Structures are given as C-alpha cells and as structure tokens.
Image 1 (tube, rainbow, N blue to C red):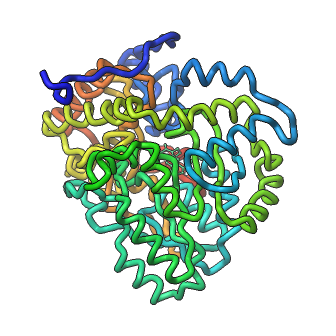
Image 2: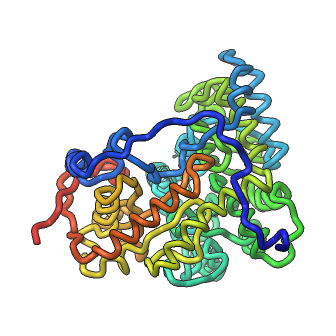
Amino acid sequence: MPANKRTWAEPFKIKVVEPVNIPSPATRERAIREAGFNTFLLRSEDVYIDLLTDSGTTAMSDRQWAAMMVGDEAYAGSKSFYRLEEAVQTWYGYKYVVPAHQGRGAENLLSKTLIKPGDIVPGNMYFTTTRLHQELAGGTFVDVIIPEAHDPTSTHPFKGDVDLARVEEVIDLYGAGRIPYISIAATVNLAGGQPISLGNARAVRELAHRHGIRVILDAARVVENAYFIQKREPGFEDWSIAAIVKELCSQTDGCTMSAKKDPLVNIGGFLAVNDHAIYEDAANLAVIYEGLHTYGGMAGRDMEALATGIEESLHEDHIRARVGQVLYLGQKLIDARVPIVVPVGGHGVFLDARAFLPHVPQEQYPAQALAAALYLDSGVRSMERGIVSAGRNKETGEENKPKLELVRLTIPRRVYTQAHMDVVAESVESVFADRASIRGLRMTYEPKYLRFFQARFEPLEL
Ligand code: PM9
C-alpha cells in the first residue's frame, strides 16, 4: 500500500496512565442535577471521557517533565524566563515577551494597554474572554469574519477568513483613529476551530497597515491553523509547520497566547509584541495583575515546560496525529449522519444543536440541554457554545442570539486514544437516535460575567 494511504498511529508511547471511573447511570443523574445541568459544574471524578476543553488538559512529554526539574524559581530574572523569551522569539518571531498566568491575563494587559473608551475592535468572530476584556477596557467588538463562518454546513476551507470589504466599511464608519487593532484568531474557536488562510492574513495586514492600524493575533491554536494551511492552501504544501507558523505571526504586530492550548502545557500564557513602547506599558501593568514581568504568574518550572512545549508543538508528526484524531471522530459522526460543523475543525468536533434538536427553541438553550443529555447517556463531558456562551448585549442587556448553537466535543492533546473516540461517537449516535426525548432548559441562576462557566439550569416540563 502506498505510504500516503496507510493508517497512522500516535507518535508516542504511553509511560504513565491515570485510571478513570465510568460513573453509573444513577451517579450521572445525581451529578448533572447537582451541577445545575451545566457541565462546567460537574466534578471530574464523575466524568468518564472529558471533552470539556483542550485548554490546560494536555499530557506533557517526558522532555517537558524533565525540563520542569531545572526550572529557576528566582523571583526576578529567572533563567527559565530567558529560555521562554528565546523560544517565543525563535519560533513565533516576536521581539518582546510579557509572561502571563494564562491567555486572559495577556488579554487584560493588551486591552488595558491599547484600548480607550469608545474604541472599536474588529475581529474574526468573538471569543468570550477576549471580548469581555475589550469591553471592560471601554471598547466594542465588531465581527468581521466572512459570512460562511456562521453557516455550519458551508464547506469553505478557510471559514476563519476576515471579510476585507466589511473591515473597510468599519474603518469608513468609525475612522481608523478609533480602531487600536484588528484582532485575528487562528484558528477561530467559536466557528468550530476553523482556520484563517495565509493569503487572507497577509491581506488583513496590508489593509490595516495602510490605515495605520495594528494587527494582533490570538495564537492559542496557531499550530493547528498552520496544519490546515499546509494541507489546503495552494503554495504551502511543501512548507514546514514551523515555517508557516512563523510566516503567520509575521503578518501581525503581536499576539496574545493561551499556552494551555497548542503549546502543550497545563498553565501559562504571554503577550508578545514588536513595539517597545507597547511592551513597556504592558510589562508595567503586569506587575499589578500578573507578577513581575519575568514570571507573570508562572513558576519557573512552568516557563521551562512551556519553552519545551512550544518547540514540540511544531513537530510535523505531532500535529498530524493531533488534528488527525479530531478528524477521525468528526468523520465517524459524518458517516452516522449526525449534524456537525463542517469542515471538521482543529481542536474539536462541534455538534449543530439547532439541527440536532429542531424542537427546542434557542431561548430554551438547546446546546446546553444537548451537552447535559450526552453526559447522562455515557459520562462524556462536552461544552455548550451557543446562546449561553454568547451572553448579553452590553448596551441593551438582551441575550445575544448567535447563529451557531453548538456543543463542542473538545479533544485534549495526547490524552485519549482512538478507542475513546469510538466510545464518544457511539454515545453521540445513541443520543441522536433518542433526540426527540430531549427537553429544553430554564436558567435559574445567571452570573454577571462569562455566565456559561457558572450558570445553573433546570429542565422544562413537557
Ligand atoms: N479557551 C476553551 O475551552 C478555555 C476557556 S473558555 C471555556 O476553548 C481563545 C481562542 C481561547 C481561550 C480559551 C482564550 C483564553 C483566548 N483565546 O483560558 O485564559 O480559546 O488561557 O485563554 C478555552 P485562557
């Protein structure tokens, strides 16, 4: 059989294992009620296969654990910080690095540094924490992603692309002076892990810089994005993943990074920029919100694990197997005719809850109800990414009603096997067969910020 037709296996051997429980049906019933039908409020000991998130759930390599032993825990000027700084400069190409405890710490520093009250921040679809920090700094997010991103059935290969004509309109409407930066995410989480093309990123930079506007990358899943560029974008098939990542970063003036995703660590993040004045302001704010600018809330050992993880994440065999596992699960569900977002994204498979539960109106939180039903069926934990995550309009207080009403089956990196994916697919298929019995929910507690994390619900009566 030719090499490119053969099957592949994970490019690692398993050295340590963590036993998991399979909770009984009675345990699952009790646990989801106690959790107010919110999978974020379940205890992990009540979960069988945990697909809540790919954030901080990575299995680290033996090299990363070994690196932790040489972490330098000096309060100031840790050797481990300089190793991290060098890794960011080498692999992503930015000049200055401010470490942060995780992605939203970096978003806070960036937003407070660059956004003034009344500013507008265009971006390729909102992300929950990112938009909230923009709003808390006085800004308003404006969605400039291409329309195909909001259609779960569109097979556009780069649904993360920016609609350049829409950006021109936004600049005409508000004026470039009110736009501190254009935010581009690679990949776009809430669109289903969809990539932005390099051609589009180059065009965004050209357009933005022509108007004197910066471009900032959300780099949390930039390696997964690079994999899709290598596979789908003409002209990049012979480029290495590392070269594509660096080229993508070079289209931007800085990035925020949640290192809990592609860089393969359980905690950490950073803000990286090329402009020294911005670096100075952000490094100064870091001492208020994160810690000294040479650790930013991370232990020295965390910075060591991160420096090693950045390099490992760029290995071709790693990223092929990582995205390959997501595609494997996605293909199983496509074959079973379960409605999911296509093309399958980089970090998870997203169930289309509108098509799955057409009898549950959006005001009754169909994706939240579907995530709870899946947990009840098998102990598989997933996450709502629909109206609950979208929260409320900051001016009117009305609920935002996103077109995409999704349940995310998020695959942690290097944690589960294909057999786990088979169990997940069987459970989704079983819930799909029984979908008519799933009822909507009523929200009984709504926290003020990022409500999806802590909101509580109860099932509506028939
Ligand atoms: N993403 C996720 O599960 C964890 C928090 S929301 C449930 O997808 C992007 C694109 C993210 C992201 C976190 C952050 C924030 C920024 N950008 O969680 O603060 O997907 O490290 O990063 C989550 P932190």
